Amino acid sequence: MLKVYAYAGCGTCRTALAWLKEHDVTHRVIPIREQPPSISELQQVLNAVDGDLGRLFNRSGADYRELGLSPKLKTMSVAEALKLLSTNGNLVKRPFVVMKTGGLVGFNAEVWSATLLSAT
Image: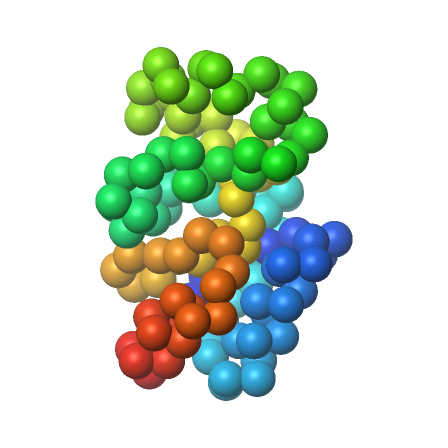
């Protein structure tokens, strides 16, 4: 089953969840702040975004800015970044979708349609 890490206060997450419901895509919602994705799930989605570590981060979030991650991200190892993301759900770009293989970060209706509707 599709895992969707989301935050109830996030408009993009609400839009994405409404899209899933509208298209009858079976999924399970996991509160990202309380239960961030695991390192293995983060690695799986990192592979799906061609290793672009920056795409996993919520770069517009307060935690990202407060931790001064913009310059640090360039020199941070993948292991360090995934550990940080797995311990702070506020840092993870959302919605964060984990599929049987691969995953999605953020919401784009065209990408979600191509990925999720062709798979069902």
